Length: 300
Image (tube, rainbow, N blue to C red; front, side):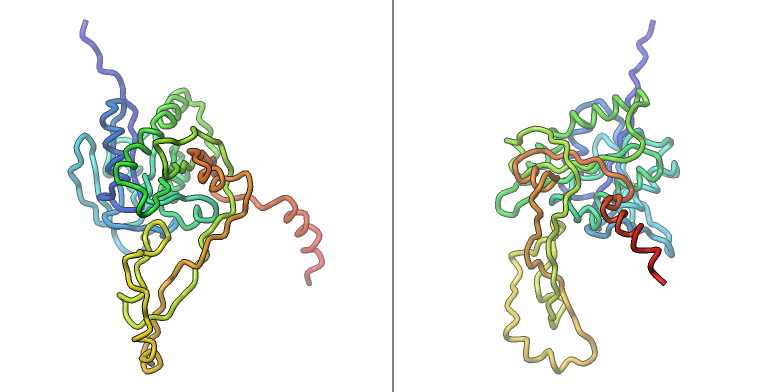
């Protein structure tokens, strides 16, 4: 009697850092090397960080097949949400994947950054389409983190991915949301998994007037500034008043707002791999609902 090859669940990988990003490539390599999954990739063809859940509406998407060992892969000209959507549509792959994994992002996605994140949008779009999903981010710190840490982060998340697929196979995985995973900077010495809730941490942004596109540094996918770029504008400030045609402004980070508490960012900084269940939208606080119940009837 011939052996029948064992069915392998399909895992589709997307991201917002682009299909060539080391985080995605490391994740795909770990998934493929496990020999447990049919690995698919459908990701943006270039970096699309912090585009949130934007979609392409007025122009067609360009899709190109990409050679990634052990996987069937396509690069998409659109956003992370576009990439997930077309990857699930069966126009590129013959069937809908069992699980979508979005990441691994270069930089954490905690607190209010979840709203800005294209990585989260990749997973959220899968949830919108009824497909279980998880987003994965690594808390990259310049000068401390190494590209090899993405592999360690992928390996650290493998038990969660395999456990999710076991629940999906049994039709017992919750259908009311998706998961967001953040891996700490010192991933080799992480403290284990910690179930958390979305907090209120956020990088406070400001705007600075510049005189050229190149001035003012470059915002990285981690929502921090490229420290190698010069920020000295003293020699150019005098010419600002003479440029009446247009005004140029660039974002800059002006600090971090952290609300200490029992949340994702706090436990990530303590060295845990945080696992945060999310829905499509965050519900309002009950206190706010009670306020508006009493307030709205008096509005005329």
